[in-house]
Length: 220
Image (cartoon, rainbow, N blue to C red; front, side):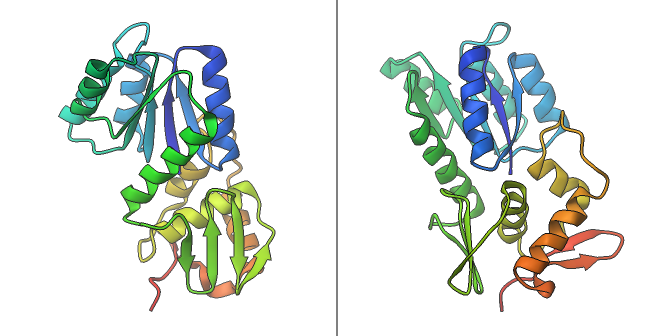
């Protein structure tokens, strides 16, 4: 899944970026409101972590612009503004959650996972598909009750496919879901990850739709 982090504090931004990547997300990090709006215009994100005190545009204005454009992307506000008025104003502007700095990193990660579950229509923290079980909180995978050794990107790719069962995802969509925009991606990277997943689970798990992309069939 691809997240947008908007934070102008370099030290805090690096810490949040590291935590999100360790949880398996592809993350683009912007430090200004204008750059964040440009990213939201040109790319698709599953969630935005947004600071309010940005150097150019106030984060609440970024959020209002996003909502006026009809974008329903979940947004977590991350800010030092801790008054009730600020919290109410942020939520009324369209935020889905509001956290005050300083914050606990584990709590932020849990809130990110909760919003992403809500976005995909899942109530449980565990993702179940036939005999496959994924635990996004620990990035562990099981097949027929047995643990499966799986890399961070393999986990992210499989999670993206399972959240979108029945939907064909292009190679470009899968690349955006598991790689940051500034990373060099080998032309066959997605194919290599899919090859490994088929070997670790079973060959028919991921179907190639020739000339279009890849598909995990809906569970019957």
